[in-house]
Structures are given as C-alpha cells and as structure tokens.
Amino acid sequence: MKRSHNCGDLRESDTGKKALLQGWVNTRRDHGGVIFIDLRDRYGLTQVCFDPKTSETAHKLAEDLGREYVIEVAGTVAKRPGGMENPKLATGKIELDASELKILNEAKTPPFELDDRTDVNEDLRLKYRYIDLRRERMQKNLILRHVVTKAARDYLSDNDFLEIETPILGKSTPEGARDYLVPSRVHPGKFYALPQSPQLFKQLLMVSGFDRYVQFAKCFRDEDLRADRQPEFTQIDLEMSFVEVEDILELMEGMITRIWKDAKGVDLKTPFPRMKYAEAMARFGSDKPDLRFGMELIDVEDAIKGCDFGVFNKAIELGGCIRCINAKGCASFSRKDIDGLTKFVAIYGAKGLAWIKVSEEGNLESSIVKFLNEDNQKKLVEVTGAEKGDLLLFVADKHKTVHDSLGALRCELARRLNLLDSEEYKFVWVIDFPLFDWDEDAERHVAVHHPFTAPYEEDLKFLESDPGKVCSKAYDLALNGVELGGGSIRIHQRDIQEKMFKALGISVEEAQEKFGFLMNAFTYGAPPHGGIAFGLDRVVAILAGEESIREVMAFPKNKAAQSLMEEAPDAVSNKQLDELKITIKEKKS
Image (cartoon, rainbow, N blue to C red; front, side, top):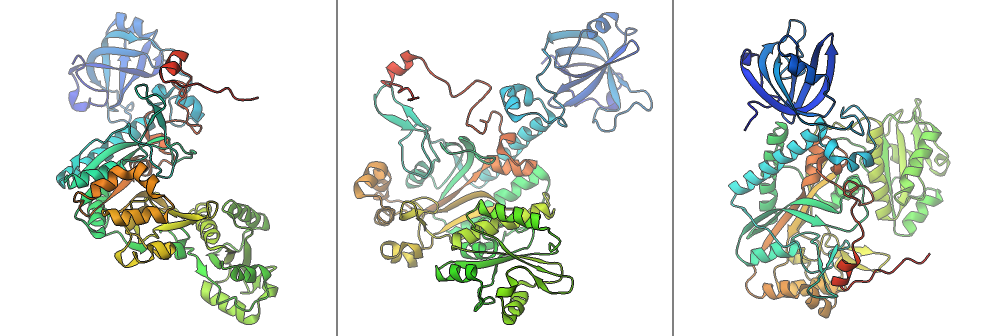
C-alpha cells in the first residue's frame, strides 16, 4: 500500500517522521502565503501545511486545490506552533509539512455542504448519496452498523449458530404484505417472489436437523413507506430446535447485551422484564410499551358508573370501554393545546377527547363535570391519583380505538413534556399474544404474527370453535416504544397447521398449493422449534440516535420507494419485455 498512514493516525510521538497520506480535501485556507488544508479519509482529519520554504512546487500545486479533490501528499510530521493545537481532533497537536503533492482527481463543487450542521433536503442527499456518505455522521452510522453486525455474528457463532443463506427467488405465499414479483423468462407467465422473510425456509432447516440457524437476511415487502420502513431491509433472522419460549428469550438477551456493550459501551441488566400482551395493552395501550415514563392508562368505568354523560354511557352500552390518562401538571394547557390533542387522537380513530382539569383549589373543572355526581368525582380523583394542577384526558370508544389513541397520546405528551431520555434503555418482552385478530373489513380472523405461530396446547380446543380465545407462544422485544424484533414457537405438526389454515379461512386446496411443501416436510419428523427476527436497521438507528432507518442504510429508497441516484424503478426495453412475454397496458387518461 502506498500511503504510510491514515488521516487519523499521526500523533505528537510521530514528530520528525516521514509520512505519505491520501484522501479528500476537506477544507482549504490561505494564510499569507502559507496554505493549509484538512485532509480527510474515513479514519479522521490531518492538517497539511504547504509552505513555499519547504517546497515551492508543492505550494504552487496547492493553490489550485478545491474541496473534495483527491490528493496524495508526502512530508514530515511537525508539532503545531504553540496555541495552534486543535483539542477536538485526535491529530490536533501535529501537522504534515508537505514536500510533495500529487492531485489524483479533481472534483466539481459538491451540490451541498458536507458539514453535518447543514440541513440538506433528503431527496437531494439521496440523489447524490455517494457524496452524502462522505459526511462524518453517515460514516459513523455505517461503522456502527458494522460493529452491531459483527457483535451479533460473533455472539451467535459462539453459541453454535450456523449462518446459512436461503433463496432470494422463491414462491409467492400470503404472508401479510404484498410480494415483489420477478417474472421468469424461462417459464413465461410465471413469477418468482422476493422473500418477505426467510420464514418457511428456516423452518425447513430445522426439519433438516441444523438445530441453530442464523442469517443476516435481506427481506422485501411492497408496502407503504414511513420512517421505519423500506421496501428492502435486513433482519437478524434466527431459528432453533428443541427450545421453549424462555430458552429463546434468555439467549437473545445475551445477544442484545453483547451488541449494546460493543456498540455503546453500555452494560445492560438482564433479565429484561416480561409483560403479557393483555397487561401491556391495558396499562400502555400498546404492544410495544415505552417504560421510560408513567401516564399509564387508567380504567375509570367503575368511578363514572351512574353518571349522566351520554358519551361515556353509550361507549359502555356498545361493548366499548373508557380509559383515562393523568397528565401530571398539565392543567396549565390552554384550550388550544387541548384542541390540538383532540386532533391528534382523531388520527387513531377517536371521535373525541374529554378532559378535566384539577384547579389549584382542588376543584374539578370541565364542561363534563356537571354530568358527574359527587360520588363519581370522588372516585375519579382516587382512581386517577389526581392532584392540583393535573389534567385528566379520556377516550370512550371501542377497545382498539381507546388503546390505539391513548397509547399514542401518552407518547406524544411525553415528547412535548421532554420526558424521553434517549440514553435510557427500557427493554421489555411482551409475551402471550393472541393468536388471531379480527379483521372488521374482511369479517374474518387474521394471524396476529403469521400462520405458523404455535398456540398454547390448552387453547387448541378453541382453534375451531372460538379462535379469539386462543393465546399464542409469541413474543416481541420492545425498547422505548419501538419493536426491535419478534418471534414465536412454531407449529411443527401437520394436523395443527391444517387447523390453523382453516381458522384463517384458507382452504385445503389453497393451503396445499401455497404451503404443501412445508406441510409435507412436517410428516417426515419435524422437531419442535422456534425463532425470532430482529430488524437490524432499526436496532442500529436506535443506537445511532436516528429516527429514520434511512440514516443507517448505505443506499435506501426515498419515501416514494424510489432510488433517486440511479433512477430506479425505471422502464425497460421492449426487447426485455418481449423476452418475458409481458405487455404494458397504457394508463387511461
């Protein structure tokens, strides 16, 4: 290798040594005939001094240097003059006194500043992603991603996991989201599907006797995007044989602990708390609760029983519920503030947001207080722990609407009240999910996780008669209100898998067509098995303090699922379409 050091290597102890550096011109300054540049590579910055007394030739060339020029410079390491040190840089006590300069490549002026303090339009950043990735923030994020991946890989290897690849081109199977389809030239009219996950293949690997599998798997889902979604993303995907739920949770706590230690230097306390799904929904309105703050949901139905408030009474009559949040110290919120909160919960389907303030005199103030008798008011204060200056917020509706809206509202209030500490890590396992959810639009049961999740044995009797009662051996790991990963013990017996499909409204014929290969495998000695998948992008984003997973991916798509850099997706030639026997229909105007 030609360069003798990286741009973050040199120290005061190297004074007097010869060095040759290569990198990008980060900044250039002309100080009365002496030119200084900061030379950058991914390891750091080194100040280079071009003094005509050292080399007139190098100094002359340096006059033409621009930002992002790629150069090679040789010289002698020198201590910076007293008072000129830069304590913010690891190389801040030295500079390279240049004797030779070679311009390896010139550069046009970048379309935006590479300073992390500069706010740049995201689409512009993605169009010139190869430049955006030169920024210190992005380099740190991708280095962090490497550290996280290595920590997970090393830990799993130490625990006897085998890294095995599964196919990218496979069969289209109904797993929840839309598939990305790939047409086959060899088999006209037929299509491969890109995997939404390696779920079926990893179960087949258990049938094959591999016992412990892991894959840092690319997954593809054609769904609407948001900050934490991409059409292609990466999972730390695992599967194990002859295990029970607690075995998996304990092993995964070890992996997460290793990641946090290697990536952040943080020692996590284990075991992480376990919380049943029903408790999480009742207390936090979410199956991924943020435990960094209070404001839990409070059941106030007994307290307001017998009141004259029609909205509350109607919700109970229709089989719904009434829950409350005590926003401590928020009685100072203006009517405009509360109207804003009402609009916020409407996003989650709530038809309104009732409220009561506790005045400094201890009185309850609201337009709904007149509908509450003295006993209602007394019980309400007791059950909510209401004190002077508190604001009580109520939603009365269907259970799902109440949980969704108040669950989101408590997190929104925490943001507004600055209750969230990004350096506080509150992990929780949410366990014992229902096996099914009821889809009101389709008027049928759907799998909460996926169709291969095992029910508890004692609930098998309800699988056909009352699916809503069935509890599953499923578990999610949540951190600060974000789901990091989820998994389950799987069904490994054909007869139970057939009953599961029947409960989901999947006919015998469709089940055989879509999943016959899996069910056939179950008849050849399938072991009990289970697994989990973590969103690698999401884990890294949390560790990096980023809200969007796009900030920890090298080449992500934008919010419209486009790659602006290479302009994908794009039209293809008629010749390619002809080979695939595909005709594009023109949109009707």
